[in-house]
Amino acid sequence: MKTLVATFHAPEALMRAAEKAKKEGFPPEDALTPFPIEGIGGVLGLKQANIRRPMAFAGFSAAVFAYALEWYSAAIAYPYDSGGRPFNSRSVFLLFPFELGRASSRC
Image (cartoon, rainbow, N blue to C red):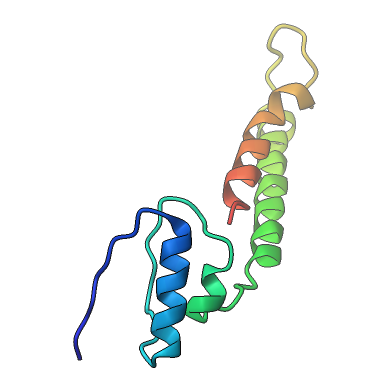
């Protein structure tokens, strides 16, 4: 089986070429672009991935676990009075869980 690689300077040219190749019986395998092109997934026959909800759940769960771990270690396991702040200092504990949940739920 032969492979053809082509370069296009405009997204419209890529879409026209992919549609024409598909009509002639040569289904395009992939399109590498530096930015998303609307409709290229339909031409390539790609299906929408159903990973958003599980990843959002995983990100939220990781954030809750990170907050609980920070709270437990500072308020229960090793309660050290640092400058008179409360042991459950939300303003200090929320930064890491927020960033962890945000980073792990990106998809």
